[in-house]
Structures are given as C-alpha cells and as structure tokens.
Image (tube, rainbow, N blue to C red; front, top):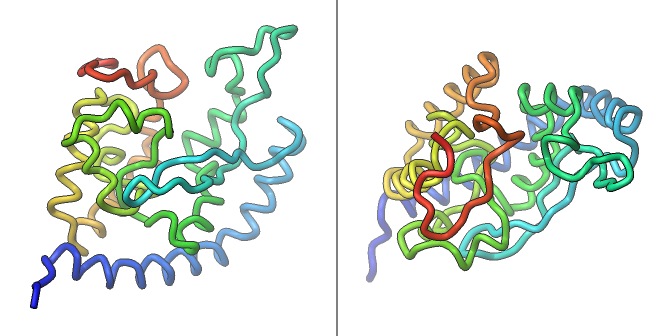
Length: 212
C-alpha cells in the first residue's frame, strides 16, 4: 500500500480548515463587503466584481472573483494601461487587500485555499518551465509565501522559487506563519506594486528578472 507524504496528508486537514476559516471570514466580513460593493458601484460603476479565469490545482481553470479596482478600458478617455485605469480608490482597496474579500467564495467552493501560490493568468501556462509549473501541484491561495516575502516587489524568478518551496514544505505551522505575516504586510502596505507598475509586469518565458 502506497504511503502518502506528510504534505498530502496535511492537504486533507487543510481543506477542512479552509472551509471552516473561509466560511467564518465570509460571515464576519459580510457587512464590510456590502460597504465595499456599494463604494465600487459608485466609484467605478457596474459590474462590482471582477471575474477572470485562472489556473488552479493541476492547471484546472476556474473563475476568480474580486472587487473591481480599475475603470473599463476607454480609448476616448485615454484609459488603456493598468496604471491609467487604476483609480486612487482602487489603490486603497489593493493596499488594504479588501479587493480580495470575494475570493473567500473561491476558497469555500474548493477552487482555492487560504494559503498557496497566487493564481496567475491562463496565458502564462505555456510559458512555465517544468519546475515553475510545480506551483500547480497545490490549490492556489489568497496569500502565499511569495506574498509575505515581498509581494509584487519580487522578481518573477524569486516568486516562482518561493512557490515551489511552499509546495515542498507546506505544513500547518508554515501556513499559520504566512497568515500572520500577511496581516502584518497588509497593515504596513508592503510590496503592493512593482516599481513603475500598478501591479506586476507581464511574465515572459525565459525572463528571469522583470522587476528589481
């Protein structure tokens, strides 16, 4: 009989903890989410939620949900790039991570975990090396080791290195540490944007350092 590794045994427990933790968080943050939803509707219009397909566990595609932080693309008004579309209100939502609150539904549903590598864009799937692609061996997370180690201030290569490190060493103790470090990073608003960008620059295959 094949024995499961400690990491895979922990995944069973972790899924139960995710359901409990995300469900409690949804109840606790419900009033805040209603306020944020109303503010987004006033500041940015509808739809209130940003929806985008992302790769999850084993590369399976799911729909990520977040609060909108950007205006719609408008050539007439010069709103094309992320920097142009991201509003001051949107920056506040990102800096405080309040835009992530609807993602708790993804956790309850099983698309994501509270802790794990961040789900990136579907178009990146063909660009990963075999090592980088190992980030999909676990459910993606709302927060992760890369996020508490610098978030968008890190290079892509360093972020992927930390993602794989998490896959190989995930434990309850590490997850607990990441959650507390996440709260500290949010309070300090550390690494929210990469230098010169509203978010991380595009990941290109073979490019090891796109931000420094």
